[in-house]
Amino acid sequence: MNIKESFHDLTKFERGLWVTSVAVILLSFLAAGGGDLLSAAASLIGVTALIFVAKGYVLDQVLTVVFAAVYGIISLRFRYYGEMITYLGMTAPMAILAVVSWVKHPYKGSREVEVHRLKGKQIAGLLGLTVITTVLFYFILKALGNASLGVSTLSVTTSFLASALTFLRSPYYALAYGANDLVLIVLWVLAVLQDPSCFPMVLCFLLFFANDLYGFFNWRRMQLRQQQGA
Image 1 (cartoon, one colour):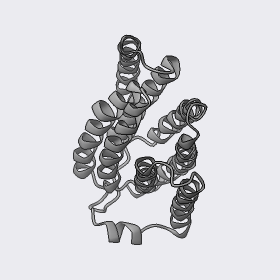
Image 2 (cartoon, helix red, strand yellow):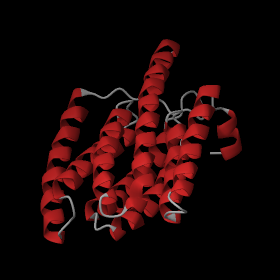
Image 3 (cartoon, rainbow, N blue to C red):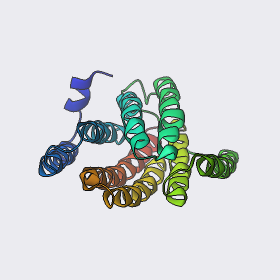
Image 4 (cartoon, rainbow, N blue to C red):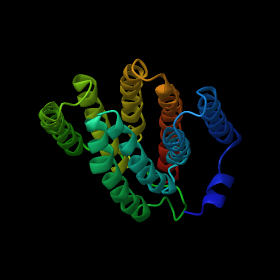
């Protein structure tokens, strides 16, 4: 999990994607007149985590835990209880479990994780748990008076699916996170209507979406390469 070595392993494209993401976040923060330091910090941690998950490096899961904690605090301020509960109560613990899973399954002793191909029973079980989680959280969030109930419930669904697929080392984690990014873009656009200083969070998840698309492409490439080397 050496940060310096992990950065050294990034390709020119990956470094460019990361630098561009960081630059856009910092510029949007400055354009907002300083904005919210916590939101800027969460965004920077998030895009850094995503570039490493795209590489299949366990360092990403460590950064994900930090991001989940910071993002949970931000969500609480806007009464997005679903986001707070999801990231603090599900995403962070799942990321910790993913650290254990990824460390136990390196690809041929490298920093890269071994990609896992899901089986029928795993897919069925995952979909069943996703439905149960969605229904349960809908009623919990409704009872809490969560803002934007429908969108927040959908965010819980996509977050759970993404976290579980990450733990299972499946390339499809990136598509689930991409779907979650789109939901969160809508959620934070609604917040911007009340508080324009939240706009950097919209840009944050737009950048997350671009990073997750690359993550899916790279994991599929990793999967093909690992199958050919088996």
